[in-house]
Image (tube, rainbow, N blue to C red; front, side, top):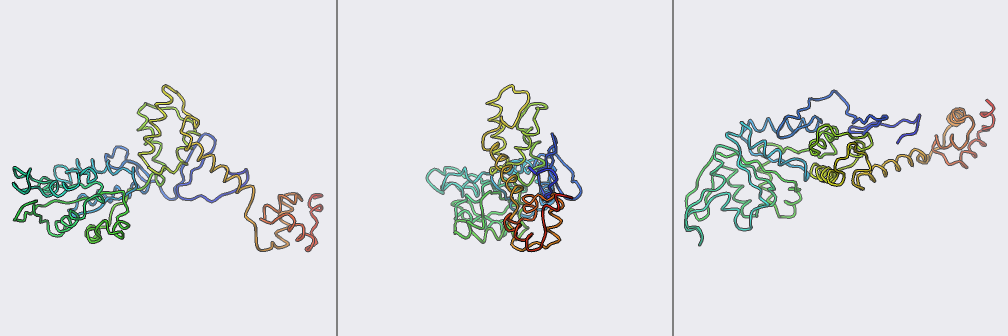
Length: 352
């Protein structure tokens, strides 16, 4: 909260409240909002950039990565890619985290009959199923190292060998990998192949889905979508709390908070900040306390103000030494000493 008459610098994404109106500041011209878009809805600049890039890449045939923090909407992107006409009759989706250890090779590359005890018949893998289409590998960082090596070979020339097979096969499949893991960090630790990461990046730079804190103007629309009630009545304080909270788990966290609210306050016609979970309320309170403290106590000034600056401050504050010293960031005793050395008398400014 800013004191009357005070000024503050606005940054990209700053939340501004004027009475019952809550705004998000963005420099520059507004961009188009596409809430009907199935994969990445919203109008925040970061969302628009990611959406344009995804649309461009889907019309190409290159392999690429979709990266982003947990809950940023990779599942929405996966469903969009699965149904997009650019992916040629949809995409095949695999969540690598759901694969049982030792089964990933068979799932991806297929199995020849007799390859192991239970392989009584040959079975095609997902690469064959996705021939001429797109294979979306969610949670790519969870793939076993051996499978990563074989996937790397496939990305190089489109060839692979089923488990137990003696002949190579070839398909035309575009692979899109997605993860919330730090692949560079995993590569440095040796748990993800650096050459596989480099091969994905050789085709094109990855698409990064923006976190919710970088698309605050879309947050209220997402919240209304999760609320699932027509025209919910929300106070300005309620909206302000939503916009100021950092949402570390992004859309997943927002959806959980709205579900908790609906469960604990069923039938509530007007939702206020007090209806939100304590961490969301207390975050706004802590920001206000920090802002008020900063306004009341300006940073201490190391250099001495000039006589002209001191005279101007005394004049502006009608000889009030405490207020004049604070405005210059000078401790009051030091301010008195400076006045004395410069032969400036605060009482003269009060008389004026």
